[in-house]
Image (cartoon, rainbow, N blue to C red; front, side):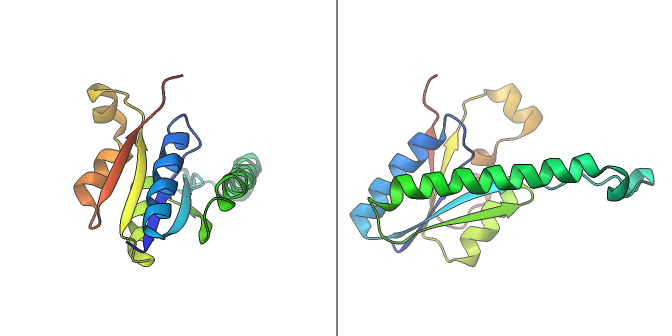
Length: 149
């Protein structure tokens, strides 16, 4: 096992995802890729508007990108001392498809993702990235339950 992707969303699931991914990476001498996915900036073209007419949305997206980059850097500093070969990547788009695409791009051997345990109704209504990864992944996927608050 050479390459592991740890998909992090900075929620209460992230510590468990990191812990599991780091342990496995250490055991196998694997490289570890910390991946966070930002939802894409909303488009108002269907309503006849341009992004210039909604500068606050663009500024919000830029701020979200800066904060995510900062959080990824914090995680890198936290696990980088324990493990050689840790990189961070910030993607934008559908979380499910971004994780699948990134894992394929780097030829990952394992994806580690957290589960929030929202329940069947919430998963049905809003979807579950973890569930989608299990169904569509072409590499082994490990789901780590979120830690209780």
